[in-house]
Length: 202
Image (cartoon, rainbow, N blue to C red; front, side):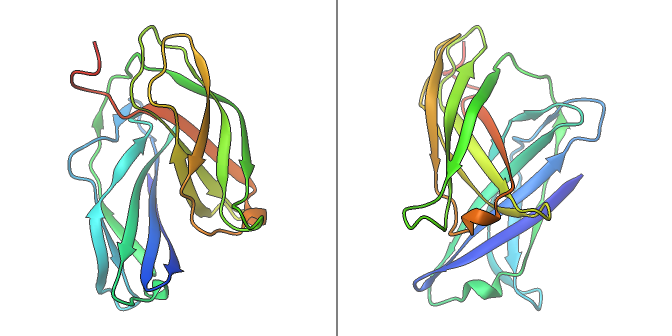
């Protein structure tokens, strides 16, 4: 079960947006969010395309049965396009059965703070622990912000680079849109590694 959200804002002559896809795993097996063809198209009110691209940053890579995961995209359209033209998003996603890996990162003490003006934007800081038996490389932490109606306001991400087995370290996220900080009533924070295959794993 998925829910697609586009969160646009104006940045001078550029129209920027967060694209967020919430994926609730309603199957009885873990699913892999890191498929090759996960794409989005941002549309205007008449259904014409404004921007398109590939979804990135699965958080987490593998989603357990009943759990929630996220795919994300960052949009920037120049040429004086108005952010208000970005009214909805469609996505093409495929998921396959996955085996949960031995990488387990846990988050504690997460807290939000507003941007530099004290009222808009958000970042999240806290601690991340590697409970795995291996050093985890390319650690990433993402925070997803919700309002009281359960709608997404945006997301931010960051994190340490590498984390040894059994170690705990601080993290801080950046990059949230200029959301209303006081509107945040719930934050979902997920830590994972962008290094799930290849030479960075033993």
